[in-house]
Length: 185
Image 1 (cartoon, one colour):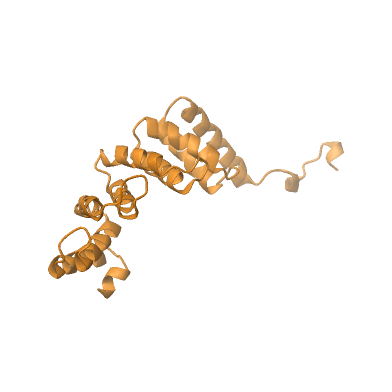
Image 2: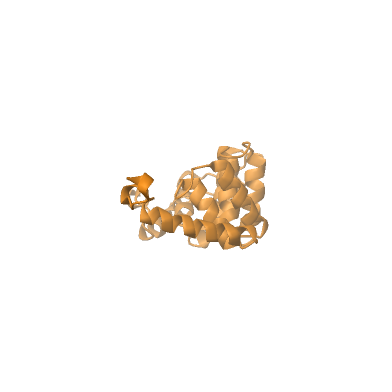
């Protein structure tokens, strides 16, 4: 049937995949030309394996290109890849490097990530005081996970004075923001 040049619909790629391939081709051109939003899209697709083969190595390359342009999401994602060693050689110091760049742009997620690194002593000297300081910055910016963690800090007196009223305030704020565990405090 195919040899006679007849149309065989089941031999053609899925229409949605053809459309995705066209979108990917356009994004790749834009990404190669330095557009950080296209680089971010390429990184997401490779991270998830959406429309392309899943590859943390390829994702890391695209996140790197967008991060070098100061894209906050890329800075955060690249920090996470370094912390977890996905697609790059694991390095807590590199994770901190990228998160500090995002935190310099007042990014609450990066601030919270830095707090975690100080709390765990990863890539930096362990310091509950520094961890609480970073959690506080993040919480003040409205980052719900940091609000919950800061509540725990005040409840336990970890890095800050033990002040139950402040703990309750942060738990309530986190619960209002949708944090499920905070609703039990």
